[in-house]
Image (cartoon, rainbow, N blue to C red):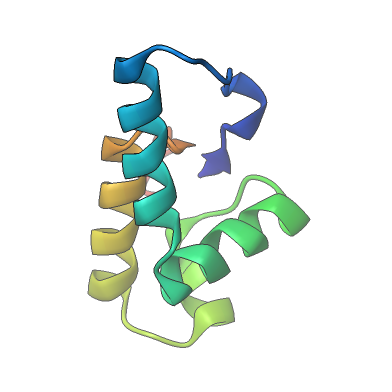
Length: 82
């Protein structure tokens, strides 16, 4: 996982504003914000690494990561079984 904040472009059109608002709402969850802070500090890490640092279940982390990917906040790639 890695954060894609460097790809964010601020906009004044209504569609862009609504997309930004949805992204900010997704990031406002404390656990998702903690995940993003870990990724910003450490860089690309596996889901298991996030689980160990956050201290919750793999299933819970995967659900939060899925939402962050869906909103375009994170990018992911599969490397073997990581």
